[in-house]
Image (cartoon, rainbow, N blue to C red):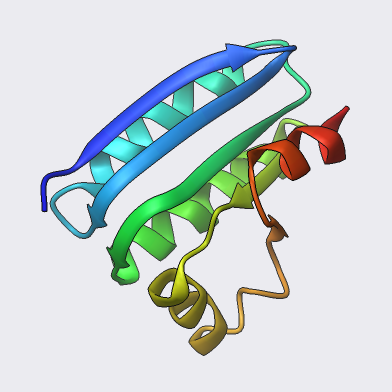
Amino acid sequence: MSFKIKSKEKENIGVIIVEGEIDMFSSPNLRDKLMPFFNKKIKGIIVDLAGVSFMDSSGIATLVEGLQWSKKNDKAFVLTGLGTNVKNALSLTKLDNVFTIKSDLDDAYNHLC
């Protein structure tokens, strides 16, 4: 499956929508999309993973890095749309209790507004 990533700003919130597999080859692209949002005056960042079919340890590491940047820059960091494979990856690493996870984009927006 090909990897696609889009980013946008909506209502003072950064949104990153990811599709495909997040692995050692694609996780640098996710990192590159995340970084600019930490230099902007926004409330937080939502990472929509609804279209992600697989995520390896490098993808998890990128999300952890995003969470660290968000805490350093006093911004919220919310994951949404987790499919079974992504949920399992976060659960196995015990990170499902570390991240703020919402069911869908609307739920994530409501959490940040």
